[in-house]
Amino acid sequence: MNNRTEAGVPAYDVVWPLGRSAVLHSTPNLPLQDLTGKTIAELWDYVFHGDRILAILREKLAARYPGIRFIPYEVFGNLHGAQQRQLLAKVPELLKEHGADAVISLVGA
Amino acid sequence: MIASAFLRQAAVVAKGMGMPDMAIAEYPGVPMVESLEDLQKKVEEELLPRIVSGLTSGSGTTAKAMSEIEPTQRAIVFRGSLEEVNDYFQRRLWSDGLPIIPPTLAKVDRFLQFTDRDPNEVIGRVPVANRLATVWNIAVNGVMSGCRPEYLPVLLAAVEAITDPAYKIEDAGSTPGWESLIVVSGPIAKELGFHSGQGVMRPGFQANTSIGRFLRLFLRNMGGFHHAPEGADKGSIGQSFLVAAAENEDAVAAIGWQPYSVDRGFKAGDNIVTVQSVVAISAPVYTGSENVIEHAEIIADVIGQRACGYWTAIGMVYSHWHPLLMLGPSIARVFARAGWSKDDLRNYLYENVRIKASLAQRYAWYAGPTGFRIEAEVKKGLLSKAYAESDDPDRLVPVFQKPEWIGIMVAGDEGRNQSKGYVSNHTQGPPVSKLVRLTANWQRLLDSS
Image (cartoon, rainbow over all chains, first blue to last red):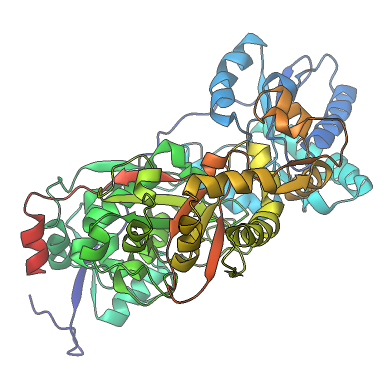
């Protein structure tokens, strides 16, 4: 192959600089029809006033959806702190144990 | 729940975790600077409906799943002039803003001669984009960065370090904007032309500069850590890549200290690469006097109190912190002449650099960890009892959590009395060291290069 471009300058045939994706795809659960009577788990990374935000959400959601229940963030611990990996590993089991129907996870910022 | 400015990062992370359709509820604004009234209003009027919508209909601000064509390893993806290749790579965010060396097959193959590892060998997975780092694509990015082929074993060791789970490279995009510092130890530093003397942290020497550049480029390409427009890198202000450093092992040997490689658990003479995070650098610290305590006092003040004193709070939040002290050779000589070892200096800093507990807590809160309480961390056993010797909020607590967590290396201008401190980012990027693996015919290869 001619290794010059049409303009006569050197041409370079180059390879891809990225790597194969190792993403494992997962299918999300179906959304809830309604929050009445449902159990909502709170996952918090102990930053950015998440506790205040959760307190407001709890109050407002409870007023709107009878029987809604919350698993407080203290059950799961600080998911961004010194024990992040150990605590994150326990989340699935705790969600099952406490009968969680859905999760509110915060704060990404 | 994601604040507005982090939506793009959330999309990249969600996609990298295989959940591009995850429902995300946007908090409109910056939670840390809102008044309580504004926070309440935003949560009630804007966040709450988005959360309900996300839980009941799965809608919200989501990433879009995109199928991507992945070329085979040796496939040519583009042909063009130097400028055309650079434009093509820049548009696809495969570059870093500087001109790259076009990664042709001939150049990559030349790199691969300097390792006997299979090009397909997977070194690790690089979150958050979760691409696989292989010997091949490390060589490709090494070519692009302007590295010489013989640097490949060092590049491989550096990537082994950052893909070690202990390094937590998945947090490389956090807002402090930390950067990875590579330190090379052992005879290979001289063999490859690493500089450890005056201006050690400046661009200029090919080994130091291109290898430092390589790591940032590699993180962009494999980990997805671009800042604008993609957003996996959310360093608020950030910093440039750091040139790789080498310890001045001749100076260390001359004063009878053990080299940094031995501090890291290896044998003197081992070729190792250590990578750690750097979130801030101290002012240049000038110390004088033939009295060693005067040197220790100023280092404790400028590097300990002023540079590290602020960020120690975040170290406490995560109960983990590894600042690095780069001592000028003449300063190290003063300490050694007075009979001090590196451990003696570490212990001095641990004992003598303190901060008020109330101030540390305040620093931590403003950075974001609004749930942090020093006493709670002591009760959990995550901070030592030295942090809660009384209830007095103004009690003094250690800036350095453990003396053995203070790294010390010797480098810089032998003719000046200057040292510097490198502040690390808690559990994100603790020092991780890996051996540099050389081929059996390494010397012959080096002689021919």
